[in-house]
Image 1: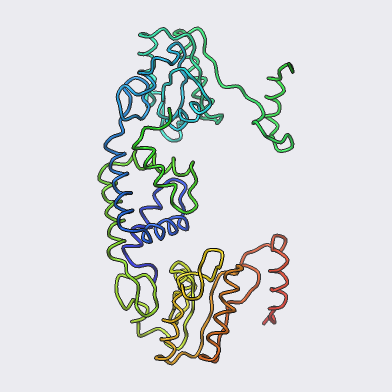
Image 2 (image 1 turned 90 degrees about the horizontal axis):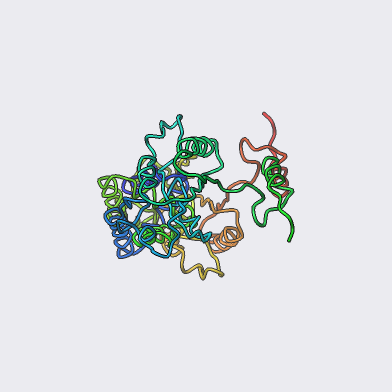
Length: 198
Length: 198
């Protein structure tokens, strides 16, 4: 005998989440059934509300309750710089780092293994924006993975005729990192990008 | 600007789960809103069904759809041995190891720091069972943590007058473990519990 059927069903549901193994799924299911019914109803409501209320901004493709989103319609932001990110969560990370320009969410990275090519990304929408607005700089802010590198190089080739200044995030030591634990590639990039102590 | 409000709400809900930090909660929320509405409805249904259909077996206190549960009513099981576990998930683990007796789920471990004393466990219900049934052995199968040890010792003291044979799980090397990585305490216990090679 294992778990009772409704419990098994719930555990199965949690196992579908990314990064959730059988043990975590068990723990999460137990956590839920120990909640009050009112809290479970609140949880269900949050799921359905998120699904129905969240749309994509037709300009930057970011998730938002409004279209166009709060960033695209914010007059205080610098409209001459676009930062390209893969996903909304990367946008949130860059925004926490106090970037004040606009964004464009590509919706993924080029990855032939996963069947994702340039056509699956929102590159067409990006090119449309470049035609309309006066963009002076495009910052390509993608993961430093094989897919991120491939996508960065592809974007650079495609966008070069359309924008004079295309940049990428700098490489180097993480803030607070201990030298001893930094990998060789990161260290060699940190050496290349060394700056004068002022 | 961070995430849109319905998304933030959903992320908050996931952060309440045990072992789920802000990053995992984000990933889980994104996973959900990328699902079809039909899958989300299935998920909500699984939650509510689990909550409404799962009860506690009035004999062994395990989670079950029926009362008494499938284990307590199974005539093929050995009714003279009770295995004491802290939670339903521990019961499932022991059952996967092919134990054929009965169980009793204590509902936790004694932990003064968390305000859990003996009265919060289902010890009264256990003692009631000992009076009725012919129990020949009680196996105390609790975590090997401070709380597990304290609870094991407490149970041994309380149950000794009521049952002649009270045992606990053996200590030793994990199956497949490499000696090099075993901690000293485990190794010393494994030495103590060494057996003849037959």
